[in-house]
Amino acid sequence: MLKWLDIPPVWFAGFVVLAWQQKTHYSMSLTIETPIVSLLGGLLVGAGLVLIALAFYELRRHRTTVIPHLTASALVTSGIYKRSRNPIYLGDAMILTGLILNWDAVLSLPLVPIFVWVIERRFILPEEDRLRRKFVAHFTRYAQQTRRWV
Image (cartoon, one colour):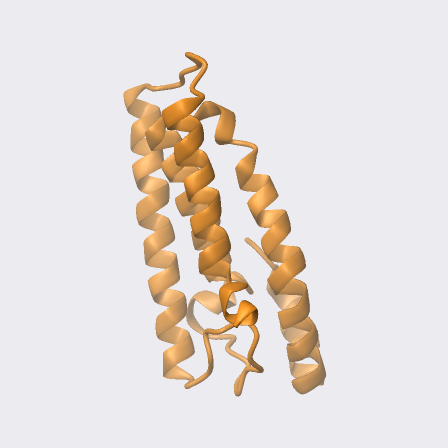
């Protein structure tokens, strides 16, 4: 049961809740609220959602899993996966950043690199290890051609 709770959306939700709590209870009167920052926040949230949707579309098209603890049945290198090996996680990080900017939760900005670090250690490295073992040469070539994040 714990394995199914240890999934990226749960971690993402936890970081979002932390940012919201900071904004709500510990703002300390720090602010970066401007129309430009709000626009940037909205663009990041929107772009993150589009990125995630494109990634899910490619995974479904290739009939492989979106669940990180399972072994993929196909190595997806097309579509958005030509640009990033982890577009879903990149989208999550963009959404988190956008929410923090929209909420004017200045003190929560360090949560973004912490989120990226947690996701990389808990999910990306084990996923890549499974892909490397299953798709040996193909994954090595893909990893050389496509960056992990951007």
